[in-house]
Length: 233
Image 1 (tube, rainbow, N blue to C red):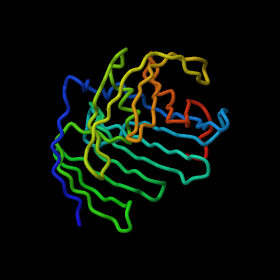
Image 2: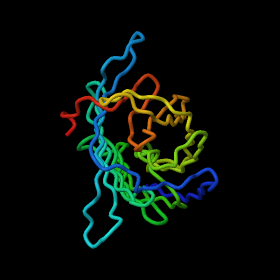
Image 3: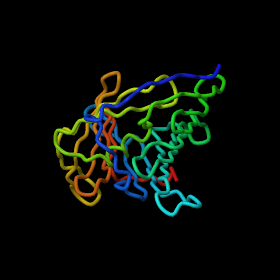
Image 4: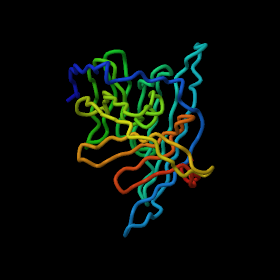
């Protein structure tokens, strides 16, 4: 049966600062992943993020961002997320999430509904969800944070939808500045924190000077700018 829902979700404007999509940095970045074993960091994989402007025919300005995120943790399959994002505020236009060659969801975001296919079960299921914008996709959350007006004490509630279930709110907070080690030396970064539903802490590190994403900590797993992503290209 089609997944058909009516979603009435409105964000509180006081808690949702505007995203400035023009702040996104085009280019390709590699991140080395580590995990803690007996109190020591051990190599665990890599993450590749590629950000480009889509070559959209007929548009003189404001063509969408296209984002490719590929990652491999230990010897697992290569995970892949493909996003097309509105240039102005990074709202999703299309999202494909899953493994390379094996999508889990394919979504198209319209003005008032999300359509597509959910491949996560035994048989593909159509997705047809009525939405009340604004709404973003959690697959690109780390990029959204680079487009926020980050400052000490900032709090934002971000309405997100991943194609299954119902939209939810993701709360993020700027914890404070911190120096992060990069291949070019230490860089001052905003630490932006959130928690997963199970309580796992997640910290994102965004350069204060140029909005680069420098890394992410998810529990005992960390990623930092650097590493070798040749196997992910």
